Picture 1: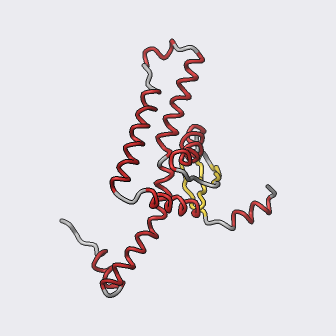
Picture 2: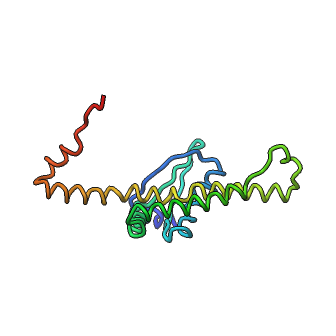
Picture 3: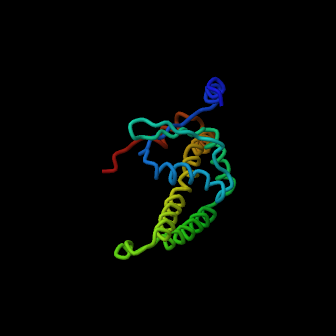
Length: 177
């Protein structure tokens, strides 16, 4: 992509930036690969994201429109607490499979052939990828939940006779001690 075309593309989107340790293992497993796995497990994922690196840190740029779409999908699929519990149970059951597949004994690690060691490393990568994949849905849901909660606030405020009174009553801080 040519520089001017790339700059125009970047300006058309709203980006949310997250920084994290930029070691290659995290980039491959936790950041990039698990971001695409969400599509397999949840049916929607990112259209694009990109990284910048500086002094050992990675900065991941997420398109906020992707997060809004992911949030909408979540609320479409998960309407009740039992729906959420089913999703969580499926994830936990699947994750146990990855844990079991990547178990090994430290004392016998030196006896593994190069091929078996390579296979073990791949299973450990898969475990890390799976451990972080739903986090990409959580980010979208968290980001998009603001709109859902805002709509709820507005409805409640209307019923209570005014936004300022309702928000004051519901959000006033108090000391619990």
